[in-house]
Structure formats: structure tokens, C-alpha cells
Length: 104
Image 1 (spheres, rainbow, N blue to C red):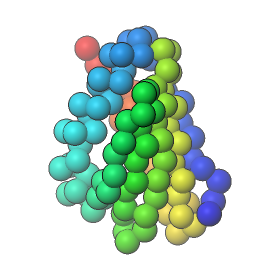
Image 2: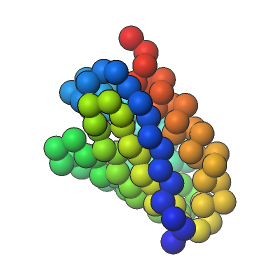
Image 3: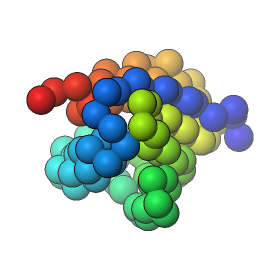
Image 4: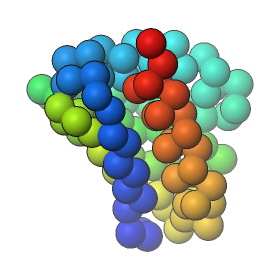
């Protein structure tokens, strides 16, 4: 297993609003991800942490999203095959996360 991919996304929404937006975004994004060949296998909130498992290109991966009062930390554990795309995934997560947490 490659080292985890970590993205920190700053926000000024407060913890509750950031958590609400992430929960809503995950629900809305499920169908969009499916069109891209990405399947969400599990989602589980524990307090302000969302644990998830997804699969893409027949490869499974998991991670967590920790929602803080001023930032969101996304950690994804990529299998070796998908670790080759880590920088691309990191940019995508950062871009989409910023859009989700900054649009009014």
C-alpha cells in the first residue's frame, strides 16, 4: 500500500455547515461518480468524521474526511495501481472540495 494521499481544504463555514455541505455533496455526487466508473461502497459518519470505501477501475480504496471548524482533511489510501494517479486525484479532490466549501 502506498502512503496515503492527504488534502487539507480550508474553509470559513464553521464545522456544522461544512459537514452539512459534505453530506449533501456526497449524496448528490454518488450518481455522477457512478458515471465515471467510481462506486461508493460504504459511507459512515462518526461525529465529524466520514469513513468511506470506494472502488474504481476494479481497485478498492478507503479513507476518511475529518471536518474541522476551519478546514477539512481528506485522507485516501490508494492501492499501488491507483497511486500512479495520486497527483491527479489530489488536484481533483482539492478543486472539488474548494468548490463545495466556498460556493454560497
